[in-house]
Image (cartoon, rainbow over all chains, first blue to last red; front, side, top):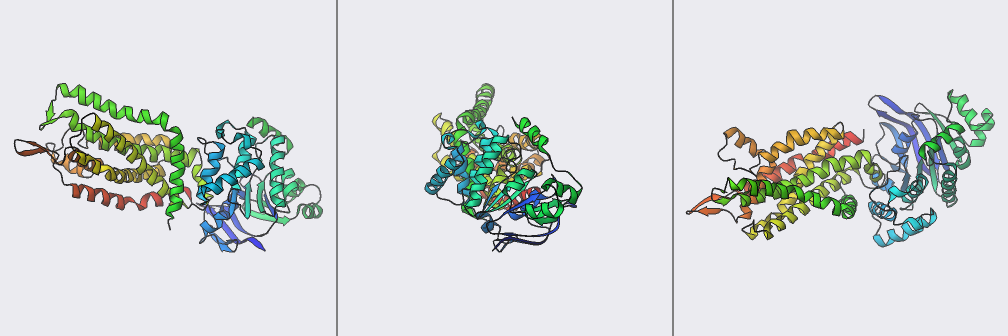
Length: 255
Length: 263
């Protein structure tokens, strides 16, 4: 069954084409990754899927519903882990989850139950009363993941879930994402880390300047073009993705 | 197109944060009205005993309710809204849920009006127990404080949706709110001023609220020698003015925010 169907999808900001006439299908239960450097249009595609903004042109259906007419119904069934940790800095870990649950119309008793389970899942149970500003970068990221799961979403959108994390925190988040995958949730992931894409994705779409230049499983792509996923990307776009040393650099910056 | 329940989930978010922080912010918010009452009411009243038969401090006290409650809404929906939207990215988090932009903006407006209501009501209690209010009818103004708070929230969200950056609110306060405050009739009656200023006052939402508050505070008028000297006012017209202005502006905060956030 198809969860997301895009046909001739276009998004323009003023005169800039961030998403330039793309087609793709995402099936139930798969992890579909959008791969590309900053500015390739990954986040724009995500924002179109979670109905943050309407498409400029083309068709986009999520759960068979038109994003232009059924935004709230679609959003009720999606969980979003945005690139930035937009947690409520004045609130505690638990309060962040409860306030967020209310946006979905989840009753308080149920919200507390789900929040406790999710904090257990992301290993933050003992931090429930901590103000989020006192959490480390990795903990904040795990809380954002927990928040994205509060409505038991059928589709989980992960926009650069581990950018800026140290290797240990990154591995923890990956473990949690993999557990969600095993539970049968459909995942959409953007990343510019090859290792992440390789580890989590069933299918990868390589994006460059607002277009999808190639789609396939990581194996298919590496078999077809040779070398690693990074080499594939270089061959297709003539550009390099961020390498391992940059990952370490960012992790240090985050500390 | 607006879901009230979802709008209230946004209201509830702001209320939850306020409940945690009010202890530190609340006191500060009352220092200002208290200072005005002290400086003008006590300082100036040694020179200016009364205005048309009304002790000066009693003359200004109800006006301070009007201005402080209006400023509570404007601070909330200028700086508060802007920080939530731009710095904390709270709006982005909310818009990834079933809450629509319209629900979100309605929640912000209702919250701004609620802050007006909270501050206005508390100052009414304070000036009542300190003997600055003559009539219980001041209690009837409480829903009107919410109305005026809504109007000031609309104006403020319009400003938050149009400023290029947070520093630009200085212009909003210096060039818009301060003149509204000074020429609202809080500190001196506008009756004897040139016609131009009187006519401009008609466009000032705060003027209408000050008239309502003062009149209610003295139970419809202070009588000196059989003649009403202060506080006679046309409630219905002032209320109609506030309702008309709120309705006239109501679409703009939604439209301008949509233009700013979702292109």
